[in-house]
Length: 114
Length: 114
Image (tube, rainbow over all chains, first blue to last red; front, side, top):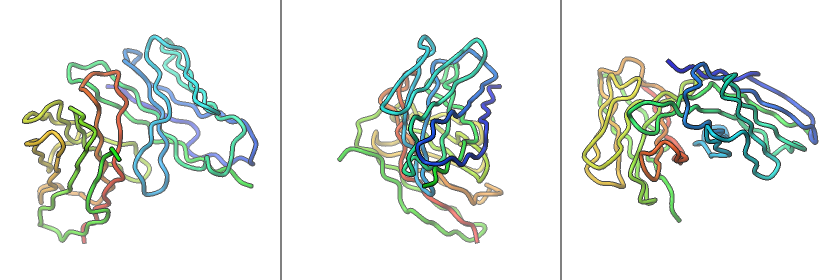
């Protein structure tokens, strides 16, 4: 059974700092790895999707990498801003016969301070 | 505007009562999903539907039921058999049931059992 772990569970950084969020998964047989953002009491917003054949994806100040062989993905946030404060979730899309099924990590709660 | 709507935002239920959560999408997506989120835990899949008039159990389907009579609607009923229903419920959809698609999420419904 696929398990997804995110470290650290919480992170507080000063504004302007570059930071890395970590995600690990136990089963390397994945279709893709997705990163989401969740604000308190809200739904999830998709940030980046990395296909299993890709090594990284970039969107603005965000860069996500994927290393299937080691079962790891990282989300790099450059020049962090207070508006980046949220919980970041990664999810592995596993290879089953049932279509698009995601296994989620428990998230990293990020606080960017002025 | 295209998107996913969930209603109500907050729902209170007495023990022993069934309650139905609404999920509607106007994205013309084929597949829809229901997740449950508890504090400190990742999202867990309850049910999913790849196409109209078809749905499958997810990892924690006991005590829940769904229907998919229309493409745009995927209501979730929390029955009295669900022993710990207090949680945040999220609905999502994808364009197809194919594994490469990003999941789009609604704003969620917070259910509290009194």
